[in-house]
Each structure stands twice: as structure tokens, then as C-alpha cells.
Image (cartoon, rainbow, N blue to C red; front, side):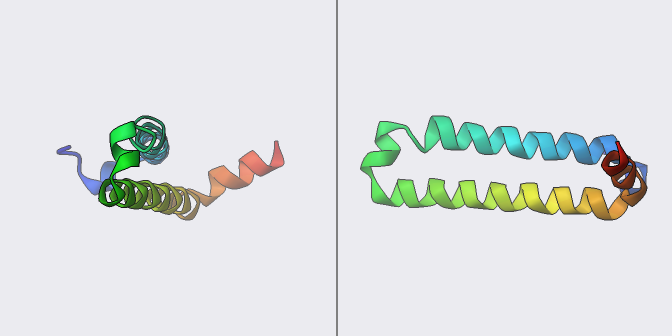
Length: 79
């Protein structure tokens, strides 16, 4: 939480990407499918929006990873 931005390495971005994926899956699997959420339109819409936003966060983090660490992604492609 108190880390300075310039101390972030590739692992930090990978970790954030993983966390966004995990949280998105939890919201989708355990909250979106819950009977109470399914019964109430307002809840369902908000949970669906949260899932969409988490998917966007995942995509943005993935894009930052590729942008900030291009050499690493080129090496992966060659493997």
C-alpha cells in the first residue's frame, strides 16, 4: 500500500492482473449467481456493472504490463 510507484516491477503488474482476475471471478461466480441478486433487478444490474468494470481493469493492467515491459513480452513470444 505504501509502495512508491517507481519501485514497481513486472511482478507487481502480474500480481495486480491476477488479483483483478480472481476478484472478477469471485464476483461473477458467487455474487452474480446468488438468488438474492438474481431476484432484484437493481442488484443484478449493479453486480453486472461491477463485473464489467473489473474486466476493464484486467484489460488495462494487461495493457500496462505490455507497454511498460515490452522486452519481456517479446521474449515470451519467441519461446
